[in-house]
Image (cartoon, rainbow, N blue to C red):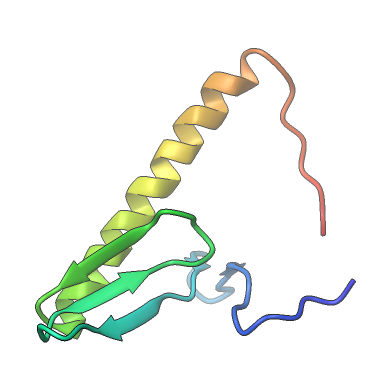
Length: 86
């Protein structure tokens, strides 16, 4: 199956060893910026400036991933965690 989307899935940056996520940055009517990460449902933020919005979404993504890791660790005690390739 081919991945047909404007969005690319998260991927590991070979130079820094970190994951890269695409975010959607929108200018609101009141002049502020809203930003979301489509790969992480419910992961949204905003800022007065683009720079501030991007800093906030970076923090939101980090917090989101920390929570996922914590939940996965709790669930792993009750079952088995496996990886699959898609």
